[in-house]
Length: 240
Length: 66
Image (spheres, rainbow over the protein chains, first blue to last red):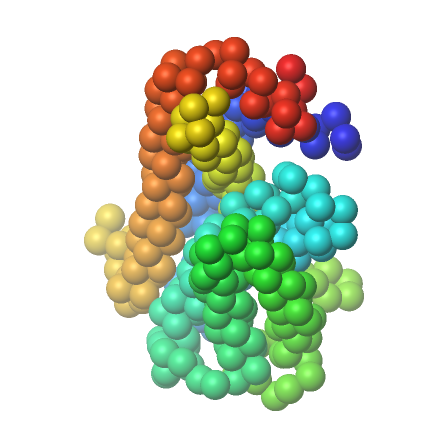
């Protein structure tokens, strides 16, 4: 792993991998969207509105996945002071926030026709809203200090503390009586739906994941280059 | 065709979901790419101003390999 941990080498690898991630993302989204609209059948209860699932569920999964990634990277940054870990956590936050926002928004658009309401304060929806606030808090805290390292440390601690919300989101539908249904995917004996419904959802989820890696590489490259720019500016000022 | 777009009466909800997702993902991607390009342009300009030798030394001192 240390071979990739060197920022200069990482920049080179990231630049090489990026077009592959871009291509993969486009192919996967093309396939996933085709399946979601043309091969997946309408639901026997929810009719065509079930197609919202193919963006809603991947967005929610990735909103949580990104937070977990951000928390792990923050832990690595705090414990081992690894230069890339901080950058990776920082680059993940806006992507995770976007996914979480989309899961809430598409859930709302799905809830209106199916439940008759845009929003309820049930445990699943509320814990997901808290996840969005954690992302926003993380990003705000990062820029709230004049000293960049203090901002990074404070936000890393917030990311770690906020991670307790992840199991709460996951099990909210089992622990509390929610309007939101329990998981139809991760259950014993496999998903409670036919393959022509869960396969498109999985393809879309993988598309969301490669999209995340693509944007993550772009944002890490930007952050590392911005660090070099800062050092060069200092050299310029001090007549280096 | 019209039947496809009506989505069994749920068209407004289904298409808003996909439209919003597309807009958010594309905007985030474009903003990230543009920010990378502009930072790289600034870096290239500074490297010329400060001098390639100094830049190399900075990268080495930064813990990067030479």
